[in-house]
Image (cartoon, rainbow, N blue to C red):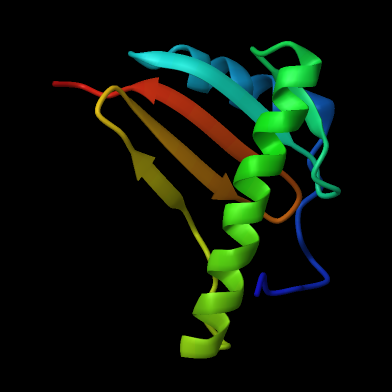
Length: 108
């Protein structure tokens, strides 16, 4: 479902570090996981083993949503998944080379 183009910008370690820093500065952030194009966590506030499990859960949800959306409109593209519970909110945002997963405390 992600559109493949030949001119996707490269995501360097500096880019990942800067994105991580900017997200971390936001209010109410609990956890951050940045995933590379292979689905592996490359930077996280979680322990590595926890991040790997967490990524697996949300990659499964992402895959199911993408397959479902493809049946509705094959030309459309997933931009963000937002899941909110009573206490937390999880945001998943794919980009051409990396994916951000952010857990934040839900504001009352």
